[in-house]
Length: 125
Image (cartoon, rainbow, N blue to C red; front, top):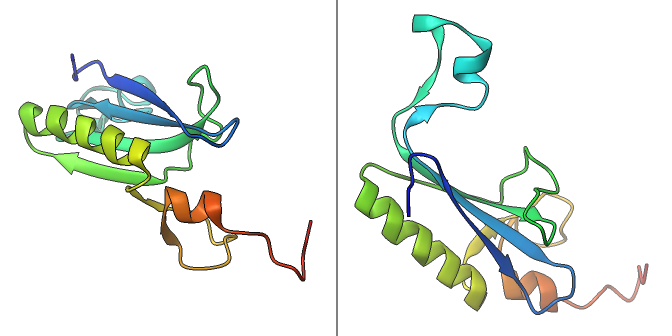
């Protein structure tokens, strides 16, 4: 696991077509930081970051800006353990994800509660 360049894991759920990308990256230029600015103005990440987002089965994010989960770590070893923990919890349906406001109940739900929730009888669509 080489985190400075990034580590990615795709988690497939039992629901057809539902995939999640778990991505952990190390310290370095933040998105658009070093490429868009020069020298001392470049923004730099100082921590290891694990993020979860929806993706297609080939690993490309469905929405590059929508993150369902985020956790930061100070050290490489913590990031490695954290990545594995997030993958395990996500695969078991135990990871609390932050979903958009469009979901009916709380914005923080486990994966199983979203996938198993029946549709409303008033709005069958």
